[in-house]
Length: 518
Image (cartoon, rainbow, N blue to C red; front, side):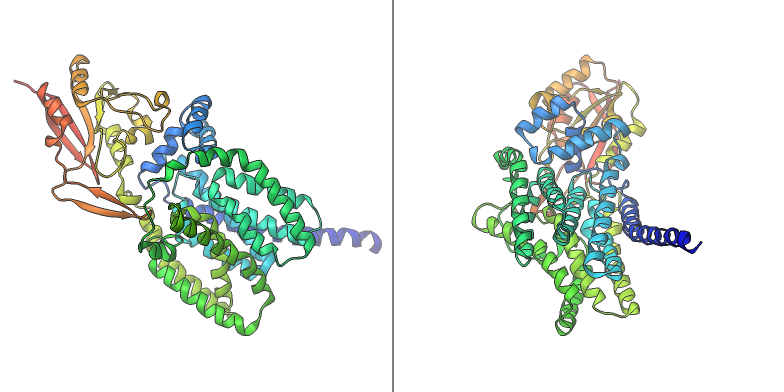
């Protein structure tokens, strides 16, 4: 009986151990996704997200034609969202859900990576820091590729560490595929190869050789895409030259947007942790820093140097793939406190200082500049009747395109309306944006189509000018504006339309115009 019972007992124990090892990363991933997803549907869509929806909400041939001319750098994400929207439709929740899921994937991979490097306690702290990091919670509310980029960074880092500790060569093949995929999803992540090379340089020669082969394979896989994307580099000519604000961007906006106290707490912890670790000479800490420091510093140095000596390509949020490494460094500092009480208090302080940014990100007008696309779309959906006419201000002072981008972000709200301001479709223009008719054309169409009501989506009333410094170091100018002074109002008034009602939002307004009576 003993001989038959013994083999059965050992596998059960091993299965329990294996299950417990899997549970922590899965639990961390689920919690991180829930934190990212909570309230993510509340903020209004904004201009960048309208670009995502406009690109994804077209046929594959149309999308392919677009990417051949512009935005190839976002092509993989657009293709993913095209398939996703085909299944679930377009809303603030569905557009941002993939980002929240990606945050969970990133957290799960990071926790597993941290456990390999420093044990379970370190893994728990690293996961906790990552899921409250303001740049990460922001990414969970964006219908853009940022969260997926962070996830790819974490997974690639995990695979690199496993490959360095394994004798199986297929881990290096997987690493090559992940690096190539990361570059295709977001070209900036290709710099991770250089960061990883610094890490691998201190390892045995056999690892260095395998790394070089994997890196070359990744380069070959990604080269056709890189050539196409670089040929479209004029797309980022809007990025202004570096100036003194870069210090604020690197130290705060890059990882801690809207959370300067969180940034300060992290700095204090890292300095204190560094002092403690110097005295202890912890081997696990050395392994963590050998991976995390190049992961953080090489991309920053690369993009700042290129921006200083060539043209500016540095935007803080573009380095989101470094957030897992930041979490590792902060977690290392926190766990250097040793005491469970001290570690818990440190995490509570970090959570408290991150909370204001987290809540601000999830306000109705929480997107850059307080954009209000969803507010306007909701107002239209609530007030307009099928067959009503609609037109959009062809230009506003605070964004580079017309307010037709509201319709692009929320097309369903305008489906039953007659668009008297439509110019040429984005598909026909091979562009991200539709164009608008002239004000006189809008007025003529309103007459010929017997519009009893014309809803005009236009800039908000503004007596004085104001400015907003976008985190990308671009000034948004909100010029004085009165609808009655606009060409669109004058054209409609000239053919007999008068203002019947106004519905203000944050920066925009919805104006109802009807034919003059009497």
